[in-house]
Each structure stands twice: as structure tokens, then as C-alpha cells.
Length: 129
Image 1 (cartoon, rainbow, N blue to C red):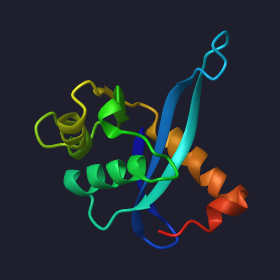
Image 2 (cartoon, one colour):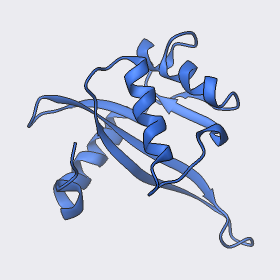
Image 3 (cartoon, one colour):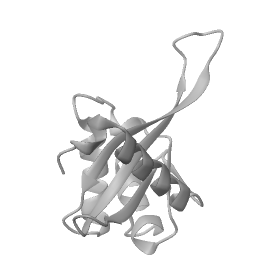
Image 4 (cartoon, helix red, strand yellow):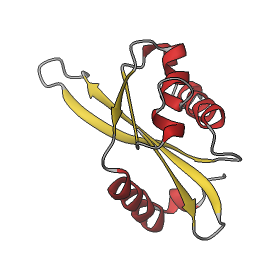
């Protein structure tokens, strides 16, 4: 899941990237987890830049996910994100054809949750954009 916003303090575009996955570390008790992967500075808000930042974040050694294994993607309904021809979802599908797109109707609550995390967590205040 990714959502873009303007950082009110720096007036720069940022995007948060969250990962939802099934934790199967306990085979008898699999459960869904969500975690914030990255808050990314966006030099431009076009599909090429956003998809590149998403793929770089997933491939980062601290995350170490193979982007070709993505099964789903969720973004807001803007054309830069949702277009099946030139949007972020299309660019991600070029790498992972099984990555089904879902329109995310929760971008505002996600943004507020991330901003609250940044305000309250010391580590998040020192993220280098």
C-alpha cells in the first residue's frame, strides 16, 4: 500500500509504503501483519518515479523482498496510481503480473496514522528523505 502526501513542514511530496503480509512463522497460527516499510521523498509525482521508489524500497537489503513476488497492490484512485496503462499499478504489474490492484479507500486514515507515528516515534523523526 502506498499513499502520497505533501509534508507540511518542508512542502515536499512524500510517499509512505506499507506492507501487508501473512506471517506464517507459527504454522498453526498464521496471521495478517502490516508494517511501515519506508517514507520516501518524491522528486516528481509521476508513475515512473513512484513505482521506482516502491521497487527500490522493496529491494532494499533491510527489507529484501523480491518484487516479482508481489501478489497485490493498493493505492488511491488517482490516475497516476491506478491507470492500468501508464500508472504505478501498470508499472508494478510489468515486474509482477500477479500483483492485482485494489483501490484503497483509506488513504486519509493511513496518512493520519503515519503522521501520528512520526510525531510520537523518535526513530521516525530522523528518517532521511
